[in-house]
Length: 419
Image (cartoon, rainbow, N blue to C red):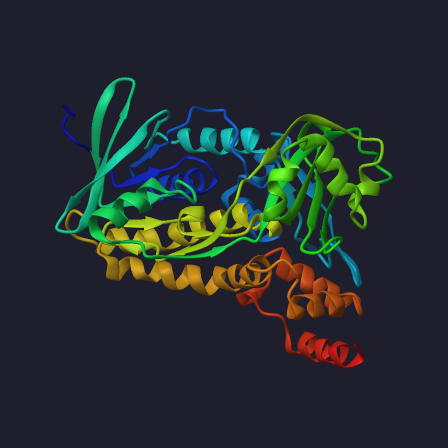
């Protein structure tokens, strides 16, 4: 038997990056927030470690960036992209602009974000609390039911936010009960493994993010310094090779990284610290993120291939959109649930700002060979430093409306003719 429902203005399911960021933003606006998560903290989660420049800008506006640096986050000051016929790089601090990203593991990042959220008197945080159902009235979400060690509890709010990842329980329950949050999946053709390395020489790698493509058909690699003097290195490869890869994780990870253009040399003399992690087989997933009384943010609404390290930044940027729109929702909303026609502004903003990045990822993700257009864009970026800077701005999710310029398109056409 559940106890009587308690009321909040917002319930956020999922307390990691997307959920905690949203809780902070809404709490600052005076909202009474319930933040729940099925896990206890601190705890790890298989995930990208990279916050790209666009996500770092959100953290800076939130006042969280320095806190995450103090927690151990490394600001990468340079970005380099390498492939069979391209190699370009650029500084992320230039002309008075600081576009540096951040690299920090989930244990430290999530703990710091949650601590910031729970520091607000108007945020109630419940960890190890499992969502079991949504409260639905007249096809609108009006709250949640869940359980923890103390029993079954119900909570009500005019807005429930699913920030509970790509396998979102909020999305699944709402889909089954009220046919909400329609989805489209595009399979990722690659499998992903990563590990921490210790002893990476400074002469081999500074505070730099290095990404590689096509050292083998469909392959990708990434390396960046992170907390506690460690370096995180990841490899992506044909998903059909995963069973063979798993027979000797550490040896095969080194082997795949060593066949790279640059990453193998960067890691020379370094050793794997701890175990090898896998993200498993994944999809790119687009969900319609709104229904009466509920929205999806972060991976719950838009999950993208980890090859580009966009997940954290998409989560933070979608949280920021919620923070900007929520005041109007609560000022004009009436009844037990904020209506979907008001929440539709979130869909428009999210899709305008994030879908160009999502679509670029899907183009590369759905097939193993780097698609012709993407490879040509990389070659174009190798021709001129301004073109490299523009491509890096796009890859760091810093481009206004996520569009490459007409000037870049002209250079790209010239590169195509030269080929």
